[in-house]
Length: 333
Ligand SMILES: [Zn+2]
View 1 (spheres, rainbow, N blue to C red):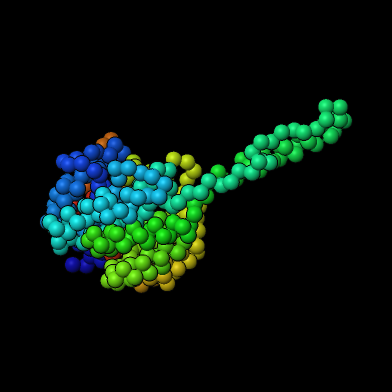
View 2 (cartoon, protein in one colour; view 1 turned 180 degrees about the vertical axis):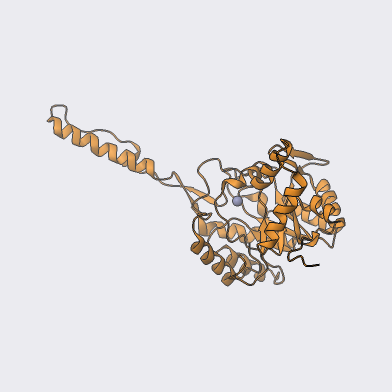
């Protein structure tokens, strides 16, 4: 009666990783109990989740093929588009959220279009050019100059994420997903200006009632590791620190959130300052740690599962994206 925070199944959003095929339930090694599911299996999971009182699923896709323009993300017969149509048909009352990012569909695994930074000839082929009979100090100077060029070249990352070009693909993906039946567009890529670009594209396509759940503020984190196995989306080179946020920067996070709301985000992932619905993702690393510790008999799995969900709710989340959605809903009866 006097409990301040309540956990309810309606607050849960259940992540599903959809892959090609039929009858596929491929286990994810680092996330026991989580699977890659073919469309038919995703429909089954959705039906079960809905029956347990879970409000929504969020779909991630593992495409048949990957390329450098993320075709699988925005094509009308993309794997998530197929799943969304099937789930809408079979479990019409379930809210379908669609993750919008390109890393799962890019051959290089980055969330945006990658441009290989130009390597200039001078830094590429460095050669010491000095006469063999030159004085010693001149030879040393020439060698040092070349060494400095090499150091400079090595310090520059060999690639760059093209922010603005990426926005176009994200917008195209969002429209395609909404047309396939996705109710909420959830961009997780963290490119600058993405919410505005997506809102504009949705409106132009007449999808004015499709809300946007922004992942702001998403920090670059090691806790996303197991997810990358589940979504097969690990970057082939480099990392995501140029577009995801520095976990040490709270003020920057607030600016990112403010920008997203200005651009038209309907929901975000910070309470207190911003009075819009808040979603929180209990990420793969936390899930994997709970599962691993429980398997070792070090913790009481069910108790920790419910405590961790309650703490997220207590911190202000109105909805929780969690791999425990079905199980926690069952326990809540
Ligand atoms: Zn991504």
